[in-house]
Image (cartoon, rainbow, N blue to C red):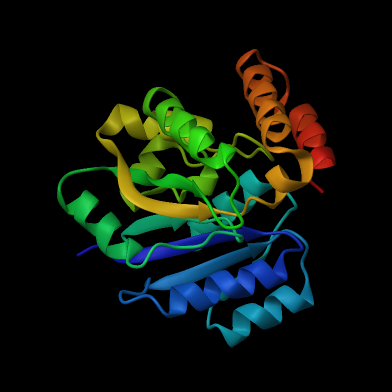
Length: 228
């Protein structure tokens, strides 16, 4: 029976973090611990973590480095990485535990847009599922894995963007990395703000640029200028 450590990077997103910590606390099976790595070193974030009995850690404003720092402190047999604006399915830990007990080194949840939805959501969700089958699922899909497999894969890259790419490839070299049927709900606010197709076009162009070898720091500056 795997014990799960949840690791959440946060950067000026306290309201959504509080909501996620409430969800984790109300799961039928709870994680063994929750580690929040705060890239803003914010007292408000620290107070929220204290109220929810989560471990708070100050970190650099770099998602890859935040995730590495959280994983270095985690004590669980398995690691589960979540974005602060995630909405969880009813019993995610049981689903992850069953996958690991059946021999998987880890896996990820099905990408699903949260409400309010629009008609492009269904098409994009199907396209993302196909992309993940042949490519890399990203961090907003709740990546999980055994602690041992995480270390063997080399952990996250210390990057602000695409920090999970080398990790997922390393995990797949070790064994089965499963796509779970259970959804993890992603906040659609950026798609509503920028337009569903324009936001998708921006994300795909960044991924293609990363594959071509454009420096991740340069891509991160472009990404966050579009999302903030």
